[in-house]
Amino acid sequence: MAKYLISFPSAAMVVPDGELEAVGRGAHAVIEEAKAAGVHVFAGGIDEAVPPILVSADGAVAMGGYPWAPTLDGGFAVLELPSRDEAIAWAARIAKACRCDQELRVFGFDAQS
Image (cartoon, rainbow, N blue to C red; front, side):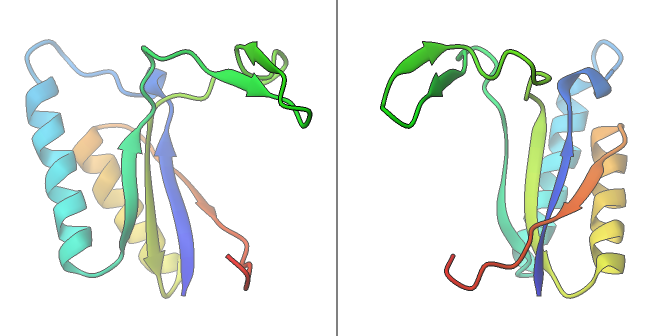
């Protein structure tokens, strides 16, 4: 089975006033379904109140991430699934709950991880 990353950037989630709580309940319900199905690996969101730091190979620390890269924010779920078709189906469930499109990526297999 492969591990799939299902994600969205914060800007993609445009929720009308008063509906954010319902979106949260829906998203949590889908994650609970993934846990019950035994496919959940990890889910969460980037804490945008904590700025990133860039750590060099020599241990030097600089505020901010890569200056040339887009901001990394939003929500993420990692699910372990037997097929891309099942990953697409779970991504659709998350998209419906979050009310925004989801990106789907597959992690490369690493026998040592």
